[in-house]
Image (cartoon, rainbow over all chains, first blue to last red; front, side, top):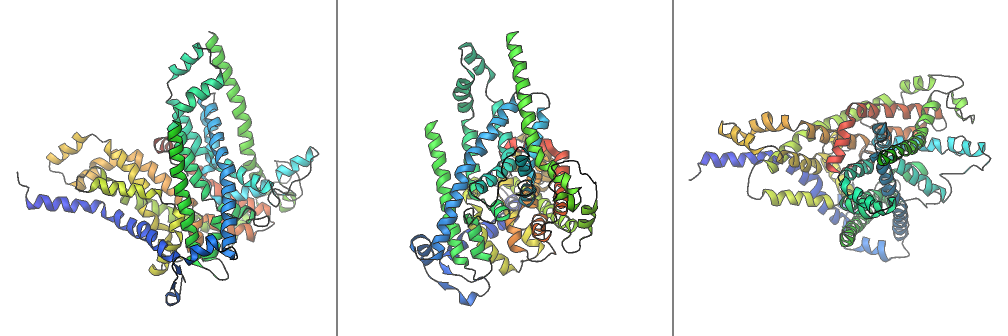
Length: 301
Length: 279
C-alpha cells in the first residue's frame, strides 16, 4: 500500500523530537571537539582574532620534545602528578567501596543508615569538601593534629609537606567519592546466586576462597566498569589540589588540569593554543587507557 | 541451627565495623558544625571539644548579612542555574529519547550509537574551544553559559530511551489506532509512565550543575551569577582566618544538598543502581 503524502510529512515532522537536542549537542559537543584540534594548531589569542597564527604542530612539538621549553616542563610535571594521583587513588576508590559494600550486603540492623552516611559526601561540592578537610587538617588547631598531640605525637603539616599532601588529597577524595561505587557494588553483590556460596561451603571453602572464586568473578563487569570510570574521573582531578594545596608543596601536587587552566585562562600571558594541545594530549591518554583497561580485563575473564 | 548462629555473628560483626567507620566518616562534619557555633576566639584556641564552651550564632549572623560575598545570594544563583538547566534538560532529553526510542526512521540507530560513542571523549578536550564559543556568543558572565551547553548531554537521553523501550508496545499502538498524534502519545502516555526515570535524570543533572566548579569558574567573572561552589571558594580566601564564619558558610552550603537527599534518597540509590552513574 502506498503511503499518503500526509503520512510521510507526519513522519518527517516527528523528527522534530530529536532536533532541539541534536542542534545543541552539535554546537556544544561536536563543534568544540574539532574546534579544539584547530586551536591546538595555532598560536591562539582568545580576544584578538587578527593575532591568531597557524603554526602546525609547533605547540605539540614544544610540549613533547622541546626540553628547554617551560611548557615541556609544565606538561610533564603536571602529567606526572596526575599519574601519581591516579595510581594512589584508583585502587583505594575501588577497594574501599567494595569492602563497604560487602559489609552492607550482610544487612546488619540499620544498614540503610550506614549506606546513607557513606553516600552523602558524594553530593557535596568540591568547595564544601575542601573547606571541611582544610579545617580538619589544620596544622595548629585542626581536630586531627589536636588528637595527635593529645596522645603525645607530633603535629603534622598535612597540606604543606610530602608525602602528607598526597595522603590528604587522596583521603578527602576517598571520603568524598566512594558512595557511588559502593552502591553499584552493593547492587551487583545481590545478583550473585546464593546457591554458589552454599555449594562452596559444603565443599569447605573459606571466606577468602569464596571471595576470590565466586564474588570477584560474579561481578566482573561492574568491576571493569567501575575501574574505568574511576580512572577517568581521577585523571580529571583538579579541585582538590587547586583549593586544598594550591599545587604545593613546590608544585608537587600541581596536576595537569591546573596547568591547563592556568595557561589558558590564568593571569600573565595566556596561551590557549598550548593549553588546548595539552588538553588534547591528556584526552588521548585517557581514551587509550580506558581502551587498554577494558581489553585487559576482558582477557582476564 | 549452626548456620543461623553464624549468620547472626556475621551481622553483629558487620554492624560493629560499620558503626566504627561511620563515626570516623561523620567526625569531620561534626567538627565543622561545632566550630560554626563557637566564637572566633574559641575556634582557634585549640580546644578539641565538640560542644562549644560558649554557644553563639554570631558567625551565622555575620555571613547572612555580609554584603561582599553573600552566601544566600550564591545559593539563589545556584538554584536558578541548576533549576532551569534541569527543567530544560528534562524536556529536551525526553523529546530526543522519544525520537530515538519510540519513533521509527531510517538512520535512527546509527545516529543514536554515534551519540553514545561521543561519550568516550573526555570533557577536558572541549573546555577551551567551548570558552571560545562563549566569547563568540557573548555569553561570558551570563546565565546562559551555565544553563545551555550542558543541555546537549547524551547520558540522560540514553537513560530515558532505555526506559522508554520498556514501555509496552501495545499501549502506543492502540493509542495510534485511536488517532493520537506523536505529540499526544509523548505527553499523555510516555511522560507519565516515565516519571521515575525523569526524577532520576533530573536529580543527577541538577546535582551535576549545582556542584560544577571548573566551568563556572572560567566563564563567570562577577558576582551577578556566581554560583555556590565558586562563592564558597572565594570565601575561603576572604574570611581567611575567621574559621567560625567559614565553617558556618560550610554548614549552610551542606543544608540544601542534605534536604534534597532526605526527600529523594531512594531515587539516588535506585538511579545509581539502574545506571551505574556516579557524581
